[in-house]
Length: 160
Length: 89
Image (tube, rainbow over the protein chains, first blue to last red):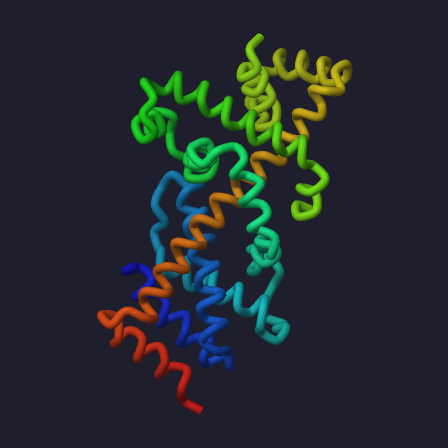
């Protein structure tokens, strides 16, 4: 929340100056926050300039989506491609994943997306230790995998 | 071999963290076992689906913060500041 309050005005000011509107500013800033979140998950060390990273990401996203093509903008400045990944059918994806069970899904997300350790997962979900969390994780993964197989036709519809 | 053991082997293969000799053995099995090959493909899709699920959760959290900042009374000065940025013609 604090990072949001400090950084969003900087981004909004830039986008306003470039001729964009508030909805566009919100839109790109929210995606920039997601990129930032995934970035800090993957890099073990903290970023040395959180605000700079967020502002830079939001600017690039805005330019890419709404800005006029600018000769100053090289391709490697816009390496973030988030735009099309969240399709309108995400509710279908969600319903589909639910078949594996809510707890399973949360557990898998904690490990594969939030990068929690197996010990942390054991503590959080009430397993006796990392070993039993491991077994549980693979059993859950298997459930998701099996429903992927069963519903592969429907699934391909929204993954391609 | 229990099924979760196999799932673990598939994961090691997909993530490229299997020991070289295990990976070789696994590849040999893949050639012979069509069912296993289907499982590998489905498991890759499962990881992609979990990732999308994770992203969706984070997006919902971010959306909730945005909502709060732009609607709750205690953030009124923040809101005014932002609106002012876009109001000049």
